[in-house]
Image (cartoon, rainbow, N blue to C red; front, side):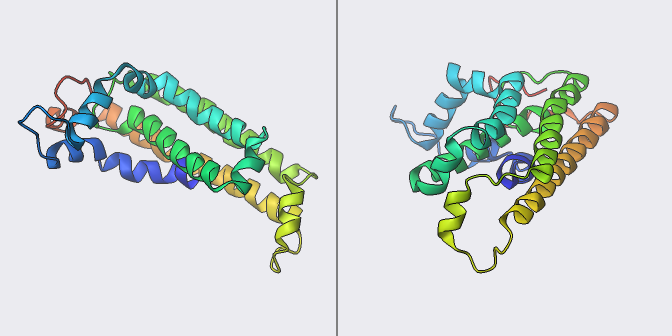
Length: 207
């Protein structure tokens, strides 16, 4: 939840792609360096599709369902490679979604502020449903894995999982409400053009 909902707000507001385009040197010999590869990714069809607000919203909603309601949950608990891929995927999904809502990094044209608020609803409903389901569940997710760990401080795994459900609920709803408030403020008080279209974002619409 930190990777998907909380941390993306911080690094989205820092505009990492824009900072990279400003800081990385431009190569004049025709070769490709970090800046050229970043620009190629931003201009690529795959990059633009993944950054589309609707696609980014789908990834945020689907990521939780895929992680906890499929065998992927057990895989990321037992495989270091799968765990690292999960971290990268959740971080990227959270960033792309948050950037589509409040970011200034290059990307596809952002929708109207009212539509951005609507895009928040599915994720908020998912966190509410999933958090409440964990809080009321009487079945432990991946019980064999945690039993093998034999953690001395984990006396009641079910109670611990129910606390986790409360955290899922809070860490999904509170950042989403903060995003909604920020979107509403920007809707009523539009950002100046210099902030909406940062230097180094040539060829992209920021909105």
